[in-house]
Length: 214
Image (cartoon, rainbow, N blue to C red; front, side):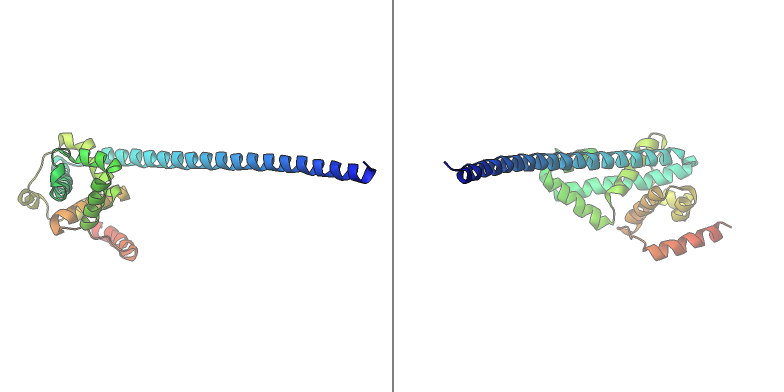
């Protein structure tokens, strides 16, 4: 075997070793990418969970901080409870075969997470009412935090106590998300559906509110 042949064999073996190393490195990089993607997904999920918890804490604090008279509390509670009952009733109307399995709104909220059929119906009802999940979170928070000391007023009784519940909400509820959800609850009960105010109208309304107060 001459020197050229020996050199050629050595080069081929060297190339094979390089190929093996490159393949090993490629495998390591793929594993690193997979690990990185997993970490990013976990981080994003954790960030969303933290953001959701922070929003819930903020909403809970906002509800607890409301300084309302008994009459004002009862009026707001009445709209909230009527909306929640309305949503539950509509779900049962569309899913009559699940009536026994969905005895409360809380059971609907639990079941919709894993049951696609319940979730689809729930989402369609929210859309029909002009509501979103954030509204339900706010209304449920209000119900849980303040409902134990509240009393339900019928529509006639509410009208006797106050004519403009919208002004009551915009004047007394400072948290914007809670305020919007309560206003939508009123619209659902009084008009059958909440109408979302365009941003330009919102800004003009905010400008008008101080002048009304004065």
